[in-house]
Image 1 (cartoon, one colour):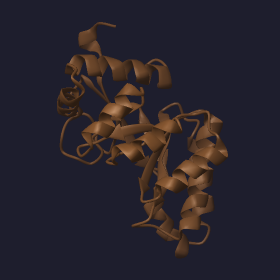
Image 2 (cartoon, one colour; image 1 turned 90 degrees about the horizontal axis):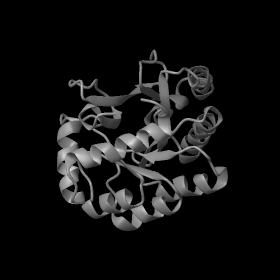
Image 3 (cartoon, rainbow, N blue to C red; image 1 turned 60 degrees about the horizontal axis):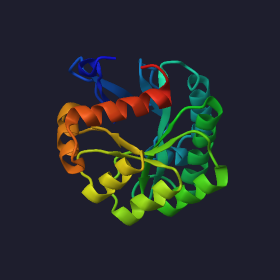
Length: 220
């Protein structure tokens, strides 16, 4: 492919790209109708509904399993654990593990939301030994935390706020992704900012992540 035709890949966002040279995986709730190039999952914040809605988790997991094989669904998630919001940790852990198993069964990446449950996510990864890729979205952690994930073979996706050293570590380990999430920035401008920290041109960074995405998802 001509270098000028290679898109800027946004691995996790809640908005549609505005420019034809941008390609995004749009994060949707499990109840949404799949869109071309989306991820679908049950956010850990929604575990709060388990306390008031009977069978919420079971029904949501059945729905996820039914949509997971849809070719429009590129990844499962965002799944995860959040100590600041959500139900009891065991409820969150159970839901996360079961989504991780669905992602493994369909052979698609797992996009992960994690707040103050790093050790638990690493422990679950050791327990399940997944063969599919796990991607921590919106990673803001310091290098020691980044190294913990990288050592487990877990990828890191960086949004608007990030630790530059952790960014460099992820890039050097071939586990770097970029995202806009819910921010107002464009993925193109994000690549321009990040490439400065990496000592690359935006085009070189774009090419690197595009090849990585093509390997992960197949032909884009």
